[in-house]
Length: 426
Image 1: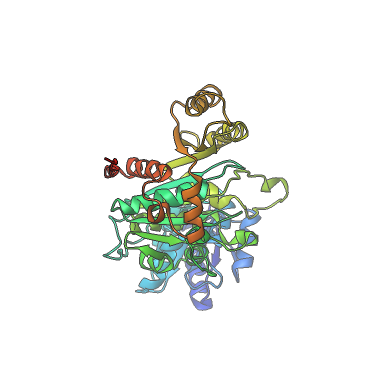
Image 2 (image 1 turned 60 degrees about the vertical axis):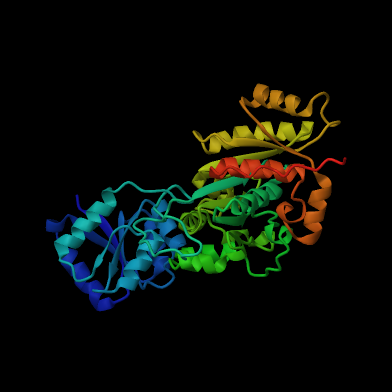
């Protein structure tokens, strides 16, 4: 049985020659539908008419979201470009099309590419299919702020609902890693209440993270473009600010978030992502088709991250929420053990030794072998927030800042300098 193929080629003459060349049983493929635009192509793919879509790079409204829907429908993609069109080849590969060939190729070569695309196992994107970064060429990094291509570490900071301190931890870890001499990118990926720009005193009406995901969705994001979108706080720290309103969450699609974080690995040695709290994936209960997912950005960041920091509050309600959240997190990303942080540790709200009691509760109810505690240092935090600065700028010797420095040094593998000794009065 021949392999059913869909075509969506803008040049009518080229498309007719392609269909005529592929027609016949000797190539093992059959063109079952000639689509006129993206909408026609998606409708044919959703109906199960074809197994492979052959499309041209200049197809109008072709972006990563369209490819994601094709992959979700079980349709592989083969891209055709004009002979010698390197820009079209680069764009298709940045969009995630792994099978690209020149339109003047022999029919048997095109048919072979089609069969290879149909037989290739799908990668992963927002819906579990596709390959957002397949065959992406190395375009280089800014010399003053770069790392070995693709070798950077991604750290996701997450916590369940009601966990105060996610943004404080994310900003603190990123700032301290930069102070240790490690090139760092801080990303605000919270789709509910992103506040990194406000914490750092940045007036930003154009979210850098949303702009980066738009470029990635169009196949136009490379490392230099990402560097331009990220605002420089100091020579070692850049920030991708988050969305300014919660209703803009559809701009942060999961597959594009993965693409941005992949580029970030080549821009900075460490990328710290401030994530939202919710891990729910119940869109399929309300929609019969592939629906946009509000929590896709958080889930994509957690799945992409090399290290997940799970933040909870050191009080009875916070510990209960953290225990439940860790169970949800384990079900979402099995095999990836988060590093648990307990924030706002203080006496009074927990009887006895608060650090020991919190660690014992998490060990008993969540199976957490070790816990990193962060002290409740309110006055330095208030000074930093009122000035739009980090703790390292306004409270060098605060207990929380020293704890964040030790945590950042452990995460990036750089020993922090010894804290200065206080002079005693004679």
